[in-house]
Amino acid sequence: MIREIVTVREPKLRDKTKLVEKVDKKLLQIIKDMKETLKAQKDPEGVGIAASQIGLPLKMFLVDHRGKHLVVCNPEIIKKSKKTNDPKEPVNKDGENQYIMEGCLSLPHYYGPVQRSWEIEIKYQTPEMINDKWQMINKTEKFTGFFAQIIQHEIDHLEGSLFIDRLFEQKRSLFQLKNNDWHEVNLP
Image (cartoon, rainbow, N blue to C red; front, top):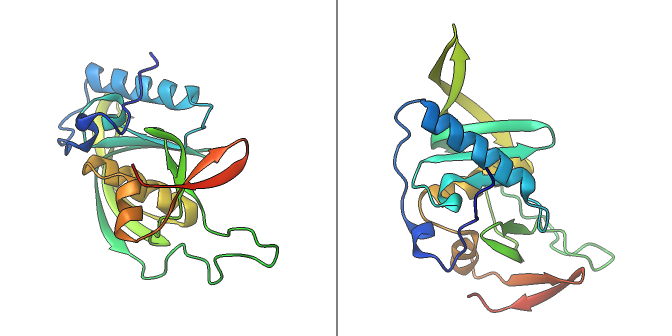
């Protein structure tokens, strides 16, 4: 079932989430709903979705990017690189912005150049079928580049934080994409 995306105007998006304790039918249905909801997002298209974005206070998110699909429960960042995603030169020789503009399904069509660690290592749990029984499996994994940015964005959601909060902290601008053109706007 495709769920409605919680928008930035709804206070529950700011709530901290609770640990996912076990794999059961209810959790598996939530994961299925999140996958369908993420897949249905076309304008803009999404690469990740947190349970809080469909109104559920669970410490869980999904990522679907370039053929890699992850279900991440109870993540914890254990290492961050000092190197960031900021380019050495923010504008290329053609005058185009080189920052990766980060956006959010809960604030469609708004983007900003959030500074994130280039590489992170996280430990997390993910549901897996083992010997015909669903279990939570512990994993530790490193992510780099845009994939690391996605993971950090989704972990922020689990703490009730949004990318616009990071923009504000970093004193950076927010942009709205209208008719394939960037327009700087004030933070909401």
